[in-house]
Length: 441
Image (cartoon, rainbow, N blue to C red; front, side):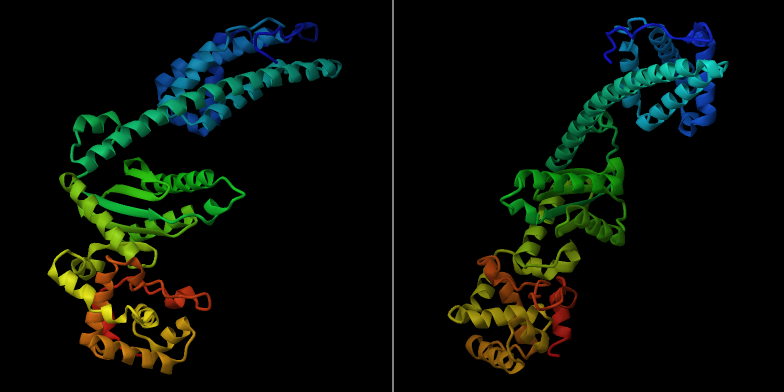
């Protein structure tokens, strides 16, 4: 029923208006607020000025609304104060479930007061009164919900804009303490700067689905998980493909960061690859560039999904720096350009940590064929895959060539085929020395 329509004829109970027991609004509203404090646990934590002021006033307003509707009076404009109060509660952060619990507790108490003296002869009247009270409850809960949600959207929008501005300022090297105060977030002494790549969800390419909607839902899940795990102090600029996350951290917990990457991947329902560099606020721009440079390298090398630190890939990073050394490394495998099966065998063999049996399974060939191809690689390049020095240069050459041709990447950690168990062959990107310590089977 619209609040501007007449509530219908007034209701009686035992010959008296049903509203008569609710008309002492002042004392009854105080009694109800006391009842809320005793019976609605979250209300006990509200400040005294809120309970004795705004909440008592609104409780009285709801009682006046109930009295008017029970009497069959028109109630246009009666909910304005209720809408304003609900908007204020949203901005103050009072949980909406606390508000609704209090409203329902008030109605239960009010119903008990109204029918306290009812007899068996009042059965039909009690039914009509119950129906009317439910109509009043519907008006109040819907009014509160609409106003609360509308204001919450404004609050969230303001916070999002402020956080976006602060994050952009940090990444641009221009943060200000004024900006931080405006969004209620203190600038940390140091940050773990994460560069993140989020894989495409399979449903994004489904012609029967709206790929943009699928991608946005993926991003929303990631953002929600990030907020749940890290709270309001986390700063981020993310798109459906990834972006940058700034985590306040004086001494980042390696295990916690690894777990965060796993949680984000679960939320996204796709692989997530991330790199991290620790920096002071002034160093954030350079750290972000370094982290994204590392992320690009991790992706070019085909590393398994997860979190990577600079220490994990320091050697690979150095091998990809421009200069005569990089150009020389790139040419070492040129003799294999006309033998793609040899290049593929080399990539696979290195990705399996030089395990001949696993390399053979991945390529669906016999181990003797692997041995023959490795021997041919040595003959053509002059670098023997059976010797530690040869493996070192061959691996370095694959890393260098990945920046000229991504197809030549050594596929660190992504060697599994459909017939292999990912847990067996996903090795992860490690330093090159790990392979050198375990040549052969």
